Image (tube, rainbow, N blue to C red; front, side, top):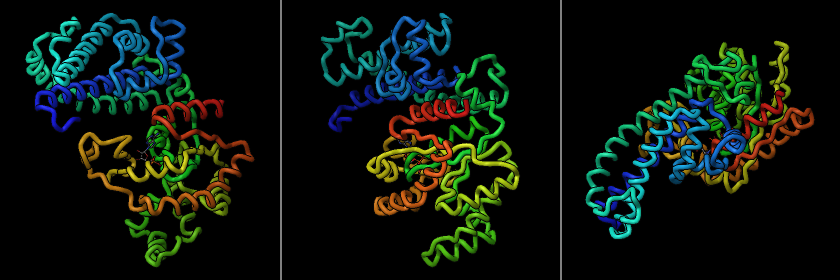
Length: 405
Ligand SMILES: Nc1ncnc2c1ncn2[C@@H]1O[C@H](COP(=O)(O)OP(=O)(O)O)[C@@H](O)[C@H]1O
């Protein structure tokens, strides 16, 4: 925002931005409530039986709060997500008007052009009217914002839990998007997450692990856990790390073996960071084969090196829970330096611009052969990891659904 702006201009602008973020979060919540249909599915449904066309990219922008969609677009989206209930339409029309009012008032205050507002029937010509109104809406919006984000998270969890392993519909009768439902009903899934550092493996795993009801097992995490717990394998690993060496393969294999014995892997796992050199692939297969199991599929994310550098430089994770991921630019926390759970946000110790080149080369040498093996077995899915996080998730879901049939 312009630093020289008057407090009034800043207030109205902030009010608008908060209200817009609030509006987008509420639309996002509506999508979750509707069973998290893919943007493309919504676009198709609107084309077939809607009144206004909804492009997937415009839906994505609206749900991210990039701009305020038009009233027609908003109401069509609400119809697609919540059905044609006139009460829902009315309340969304009112909600949209509030944000629109703030948008106009911010614009008017910025330009200091009271004259032009008379052209808009929604806007009062006396801009001072907006100060009080903006303050009141800002207060309300701030309170609602926290509640909506909280509720969206809780409902996403609730919906996925309710639907987990319960076939096509959730208890409340809402239909889960068919593509997601097919994944939810899988008895077990053993999946390798492949891709360079920063490709989005951890980010996508937060959604996938709920859908598939499996743990996300990250080699770096179990290594740190073993060291923290003073496990024998952890102590040996620490000995090597402290001397600047690599942890021997057999130590890592023992740790992974141990982790795969835990009860939460009964429906499978998302294995991230392992196997890395080709030799450990054989070891993993032996571990699984003992129980007559095998890896179902390897999911590889592709991003250009320049994007990996940007993502790694801005990556932040919660010190209390490393699955809570943020990015300084792309997924900024609501409060600077703090996770939504209250924990402090930190950079991962290995994330620095100086090490990324080295890690990129290491990735090419070590994990490319693993993806080649799964490619030759026709068990490799490659997904473009660039673009909006939700779009990547949609790609993952369609690719997995197509693969599992
Ligand atoms: N599609 C995306 N667009 C923008 N930023 C992303 C995207 N996916 C992940 N990020 C951010 O990039 C950083 C690295 O993502 P992460 O999931 O930790 O990668 P990986 O587990 O593959 O190393 C994180 O800060 C995350 O918030």
